[in-house]
Image 1 (spheres, rainbow, N blue to C red):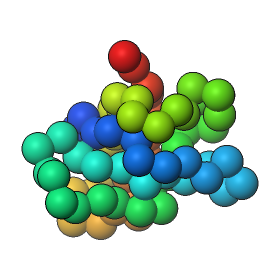
Image 2: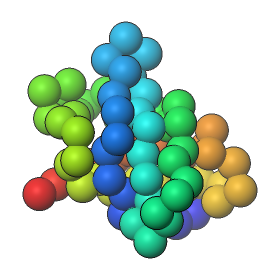
Image 3: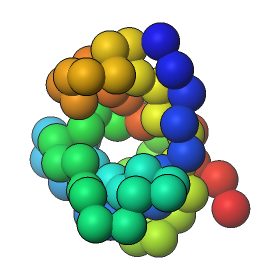
Length: 70
């Protein structure tokens, strides 16, 4: 399990998933990353900094956005 920083590129409030760009990765976006339901949709503004937990670093379906910050 690891904790990584990322930037929010898009947010889908319908299924509570996000497209993110990991810090240090300028060309690769991860799509369909789950977002913790306790984060209000209003906080998911494009460009926000994110904390992302990876339960399995090789499987993005095992990742979840756990916090937003400025």
